Length: 138
Image (cartoon, rainbow, N blue to C red; front, side, top):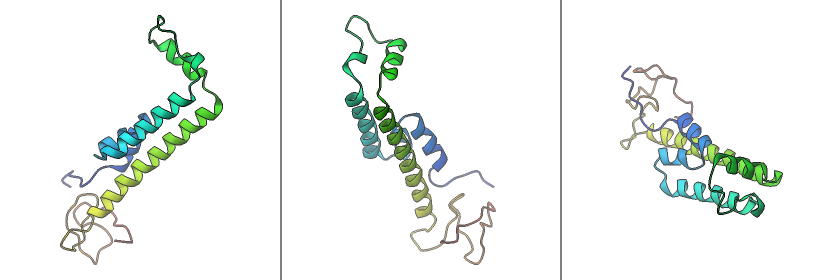
């Protein structure tokens, strides 16, 4: 095995998307989608955060202020943010997964392994180079 992977790793994209919406899309070089997810999450928090949770000008920005603001979020806002995180993670995973399957067939029509990127034998159900099983739809 040569350790080379063609395409992006879907689980890494999903893990980055869990850290903050848009990070998984940045990894996938989907700039507009990354900006959209980041902006949508930021806007949701800005709209849902009550004015009483924002510290006064003299209070400054601290971890305590962030914790107080997160505790002041209503349940509906927490659910909306959670749904955004889930949808963002699923979207990043599906994009990464789709880019790998698109790369499995080369421009010349020959079948390629989604794991190592090498040309495979059409009669085999696995890659003869890295022994990864090939999907049935390929």
